[in-house]
Image (cartoon, rainbow over all chains, first blue to last red; front, side):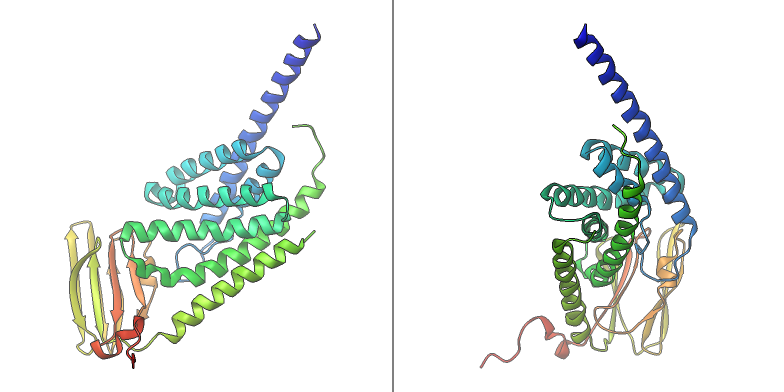
Length: 176
Length: 125
């Protein structure tokens, strides 16, 4: 009897996680859209705030790596089809996967706050995109963008991490 | 809210970035050749001292016009969607480059043979 009750509660929890993940994916998608609308007057591709990363950082802390990873992939595929094109999807995947892997590893060490995790994620994201660009154009000279993208990833990552830390403290401590 | 490890990581990344930018700034010198590659393969080498317009037409949908004027190179026109290459403006120094990712066209500047030895020390004695 009690095991059945347990199973029902477990299933309820799973459903709740699923619904939450879907909502977070939708939210991340909206952030991607808002970002795609804001023009950035810099002649270097890849500089942006990365507010969609806010959702991913939150998902890593609240739901764990598997959910965060899936949410990120769903966001990238849909945002790629809707806004940036299939070509842009390649870059987003390279950046997104490297960034989430780095963020999760740093999160697991327990040494870093959300700001540090997000900062490393921002740098890793830009680095992943740059490496993909080098592979596609098959020329290493593109690395001259490296320092610009490094700094932009660093500071946008800090901004996003700061925001994430503020929001995280205000979230109700619900069981998910 | 901020932990010690955050600051350490921040300083490490910052120092690394500054080192890379310092290195790329100090090794920059005025170039005198523009090298155009399409999909990783050499398309042509052009002198910066001669004003000209180069047409890179791969097919009807992938056309780029490169302009050389007063020692600087710029992408004057591109059929690509994002126009990042056109907005990149003019370049004139070695290691500078303009890349049109959608059309896979890349322009980079190289110096003359005598100041090209930046990667290897010339003085060995």
